[in-house]
Length: 143
Image (cartoon, rainbow, N blue to C red; front, side):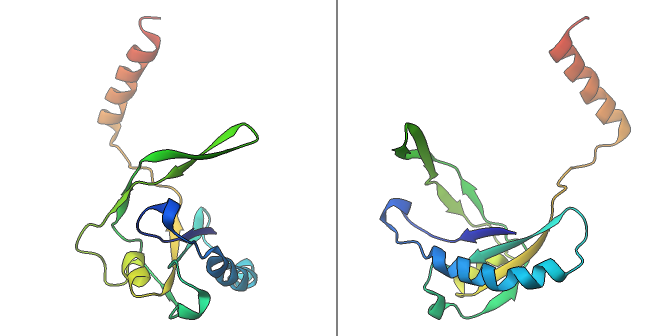
């Protein structure tokens, strides 16, 4: 299970409600472990950044169309190891599916989405061979 706490704004100026996500996830794990799931899938839990008492419920959701423009900033250093935080911007595309995780979060619901792990885009044989030939030339030259 992937678990996310949604936030907007500067992450350095926000109090995160990780305990909300933890409480919901802990309550779901026993049920999830008993279910027969299709291979190469995973559940994605998204929670609003709110205290547990303010969450309106839990909904099944389709993956939304929003995406994040990455901007990594050095946040702190622990034991000589730098720690980076993604402080980029969320971009929302429209139209969102009516049951998207983005809209569920905006409505103060936690959401669960069942995701497929294999995101491979299939390429027909002739263009695939052309790519492989070009890559071989770039990587290995005239060996």
